[in-house]
Length: 356
Image (cartoon, rainbow, N blue to C red; front, top):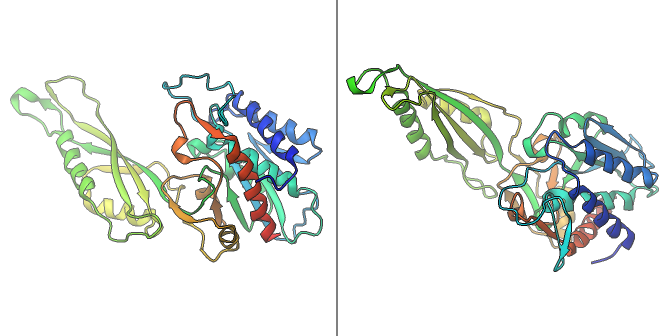
């Protein structure tokens, strides 16, 4: 699907190999930020840096025109212990490019950079094209996309590059993590003393386990509460624990707000609880939005994504879409097909062409 200058593809692959070879764990993206800066500088593209975020605007940028944002991230998770290959050695084999961050989300990132370069010098376009490579996406950090957004000018809508097999993720679950503490009273287990905080926690956990939400989304299905961690401060077998802590992973569809979820918990849990953050809200883009309609024109399907991304932190409509497969993200011996990147660049270019 090569309907663009082949140099864009070749440069994208070369850049991705550099990024793979350079560790860029969340909050430690300085070196890949330098690589991206150098890449733009060598091509005469004006760019800037905020923290470890890199951004650029098309050469004929006009603040009076609407703007579309092309965004993906350059941080990665740490490699898991199942790797049989060096995660920082980019290796081509059987049409695949292996390496940490190749699929999540290096392939998307370099495809969007190629797309941005394709439109960088375009004259008389109806829209501005703005690019941002964000940091800290994997940890939803405050020094990621939220830090750079104020520098991008007014953005009307955006494309967030994440591996979706180039299908359109038009909705995304919200994520909220809640820390809970059940309070009891210490005592000696042999004498049946105290108030067992662990038992109190289990009562709340049982309620959480059986909780069903009435409003089911056509795109995202049910909202869910899942207890994922439980612990007591007590390490002695004969002491009744006075305190028990547990963590709830909350995945919310677009039909519920975090405030509604918290009110429900307050009415039903005996444990104290506090959300770590309420920033990662559920999002959706209307099916009649110009970006979605452009994707449909290309024959792309749409779905609701169970995973979260920087899309949740953007105060404008966004379409999550990109080459690669989410099922490969964070797996050992991560890879992306080279053909996926080739198709990704072509698809992004066609998508943006329809709105320019």
